[in-house]
Image (cartoon, rainbow, N blue to C red; front, side, top):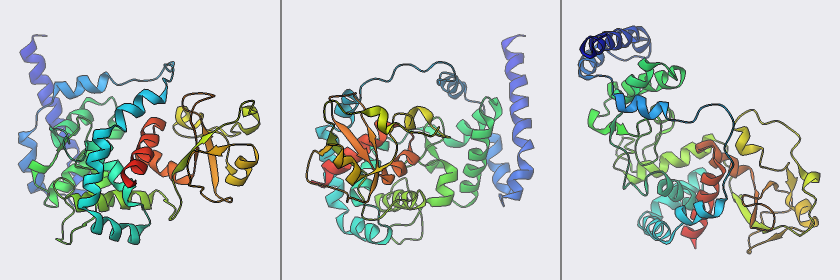
Length: 326
């Protein structure tokens, strides 16, 4: 088929697909006026399709690298210094949010730092066009179609189209929320009646804290502590006994849950002064293998994994938070 004819066929299929969403959009309260205004502006974005198809799929996992190089790149002096500046600039506001939610102010700042380097880069893809392309293309329609509808709902609610930019896969704003997450969890942190996660640090930080509240953050409990594991430690005795239902490659690296008192009796020594409390449950993770720094991780670490299910990400958020707080 000549290229021009193929493009015309794709365009017709794309427009038919968008129209097929109209009943669901109406059921969500999205007006026909909003759809009629935005639909004619949309065309498929081949770059987005290419990026999506280059994502790793099933098959054999590649070996997991050491954490230390990642830590050095993501918990570096520049990110720590900028985080401390953001922390100081928002200290009063952060203290209020922490008092209301129980989420530590440094955790909010660390997420902000990891997601967009404190707002310095939030992505420049047109969110509606990207999500419309990914939904129409169909490889992961179950994931992207609800996000397209959520973005249309944001537009219908009055969020300017110019704000609706972000990553090619739909994450947007300082916290890189997906549109459905924005609709559920975005909060007004500065009292102006809007949840502007694109230009208001106050709103972004309050929204991040609300995310962690919904993920079950436990007030007054650290995310984890660095520990030294004694030589000759019997790792088989603490191996996990369950098969994790999600993110198995992440959770299979964790031990079973034991109390901090039990870990201490096994000879694990905390690297620092923080001890979460003898009754606090924690899992052991040795990201660089035996003989290197290990971590005892509380339930709050799982809340960080809920934001991004990667041990390297969650460890780096925790370590950056600790460094910003110092």
